[in-house]
Length: 279
Image (tube, rainbow, N blue to C red; front, side, top):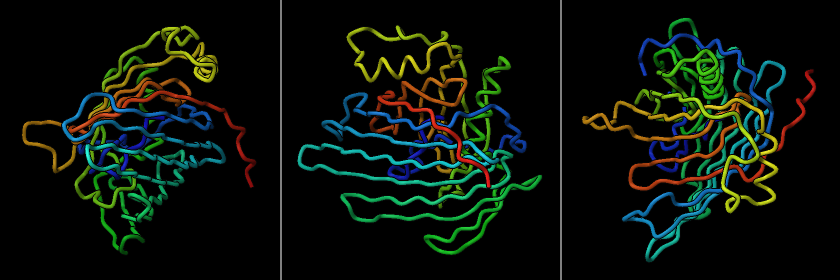
């Protein structure tokens, strides 16, 4: 899957989606159950940051008509006089049919709780209805939106069919969803994965194992920009990401651009998981 957005920066990593006349999700691409670890570092020099390091650990299980996701993003940011540790934890359950989404996210900074979001979203034929339990109980309605895992499946389906552009409205569990998050993704073909996809100097035994587990799979380069009602008048996105998306839903070679700084990372571990038995 694409790297999920992080609430540590306003809608940052909004890896998930415009009121461009979206249709109800009908994705059928098979997303593999897997556990992935991404090691992150600062992608480019920043006026604000001396360096940064982080890790994303996510586990996706596709079984019994649901996508069950657990996701954790921990990052340490080094400024001249200060070090800040951020920690975001998310769990979600999303119907493969694309009609229901349950989500819970907590964010800590330097070990101190900063925010907590919990709720559900339901898709009808024409709209997305959201019910929040935290940070406060409230309900609101959005234009019909795609949920995160269905968005990933839609990207793969479009790529398999030779499509180059996906534009959608997305809801990924953000408490400020009335800002109407949208995504425009540009899809370009990538070579079939091999164990020699990167220079020998960049390989480690762990990285070689990751590449071996992806060898032979089709993949695509995805360049995705996210917008909301708070986007700049000059058309600049609020968040931008690039990544290599494989036909089984695994992503690699990610860049997360927050505007004032960017993080880059790649898979350091990938394990495929057996589905849990259905009750």
